[in-house]
Each structure stands twice: as structure tokens, then as C-alpha cells.
Length: 357
Image (tube, rainbow, N blue to C red):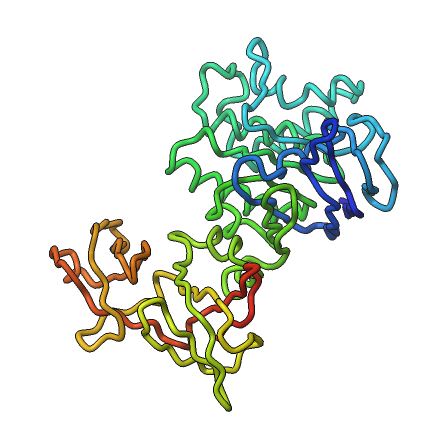
């Protein structure tokens, strides 16, 4: 396996910049997930690592070797695509062994590699089948097996589960995580699904508009988001936001919301008196109480099985609350809610984090 390092890597199409000075060090054996909305540049970055896109600026090294101008076949990496990309006229065994046959490996070596990979992936009963006789999940396993038999320096995954239904995605997430633990392979995984990112990653790289917003362990991004984008993107449902202004006291700060409600904080935040700030709180941290601090109008009640998502209007803004209290399934026009100060996040006018309580 190998480390991967990107230093000030950029990508432009003519005068249009799609990636701007990305710095990222991926350790040997690490599982890094690139996550962000469509068009943020995550797949382009993955393709640059693979050699399928040219690098406009900066340096890319794999296992200490500069590979900017190296052809994909010479980088010793394996890529698992969203579309599976299996040969329809070949059976499973032939699809998995194709790259080894191109390299003129012996029949014994090929048979051993295919047997080991198919055993790990539960593909032994399907080795003689062609792709059309397989389910979507089985085809994705074949695509993963084709990558595994090569024993590459690194695995690259480009949204490999997006064509599967919800149950299969859940199963395949567990399979990929188990395989990574077993193989110890350096892996870079692209997805727009933040649940996949949270469950799979050693570290997450959150991206937006061609720039890296934050890099860290999944719970670091969840508990201490660097800015409003990360706070809103990571978590399902995403974080709630309310606009307010800062009032500084001798020992702590107070955020005054738009309708005059005053919310004392547990710390003094680095903001000027009267400065506009954004208050954030995750839906699962909002509580309901008869003597709650804030009035909220109920727009929609959305049961999920695990719990209930209440769609509210708070001070004229859309607001969500997640609860497991089934009593709240009963239609109500209004509720009173609390925003526990130990669960609050505060962001400045530029969207950067000022404090997490």
C-alpha cells in the first residue's frame, strides 16, 4: 500500500477553475472520503489521482513518487466506478482476472488471486455467470473483486453505491468497511451521501465549490464544523440556523435573535458588540417543553420509524427537530422549544465558526 500527497493541486478548464490549491496528505492504509454536493470537484480530484484528468497546477505524489505526468496504468492504483464497467461477454471469473491476464500472469497466480478475492466477497457461487445474470449488488462486488486481485498501491472509489437501492447500499457499506479492515488498503472514496462518508471514513474531506472546507475524523466534522457549509451538509437532517446579534457581557456573550429573544451563552465569543452572528443547533439537540424558551409553529410531522422529524417555523425561519417521543406524532399547531446552550454553535458573518459550546 502507499501514501498519497497533494500539494496545492488545482484544475482548470480554460479560464474556468474547478479545483483550487488542494492540500491533502493521505496516510498509508487510511480510508479517506471526499464528500460534497454535485459539482464541488470531488470526482475531478479523484480522477486526477487516477491519472484520468490532467493536473493544471501543484504536485501529486504516490508512495513518495511524483506522478503528475505518469499514465494511469503506471500508477499502480485500482478504480471502482459507479457504472461497474464489466465486460458483458465475460463471466465473473474472467472479468476479475482480466487485468492479470493482460499482464501475462501465470494461470496458477490468476486462479489463486481470483479465488481469494471471490471468497472475501462471497462470489464463489457466481464465478461462471455473466454480468446480466447478476444483481446490482453482485455486479458491484465483481467490480470490487477486479480491483482487489491486482493488489494495487491504492483503491479509488467513484460513488460506487449510488446505483443501488437503500438496503443494498447499507449492506455494501458494511462490506466495504469490512474489506478495508481486512486488507488495510489505502482508499479514497467519493460520495455525495454524508451518511456513507460518516460510516466509512477514517477522515472526511468536505468540499464545496472546488475548495476543501474541512478535513477531519467524521465526529470532528459533526461536533466541531469549521463553517456554515460543513455544519449544514454533515448530519441528517442538517443543522438549524438562526440569525442574531452579539451582546458582550463581562463574563459571557448573549445572542439576541431577530424578535428580541435573548439567549445567554456559556462562553464569551470573539465578536464585537452588536456584530451579526449565526446561531446553529442540530435537530436532535432541540428539546420540547411546556415552559420552553421559544414558540415554534408546526408545519409538518415526518415519522421515520427510528424517530420523528418535526418541520417547524421559528422566528420566520425553517427549523427542524428530531425526537423519539411518539406523543409528538399527534398534530399540534404550535410547540415551545428549548435550545440548550451547551449544544449551540456560533458562526461569524463570513460563515466561519466562532465557538462550539
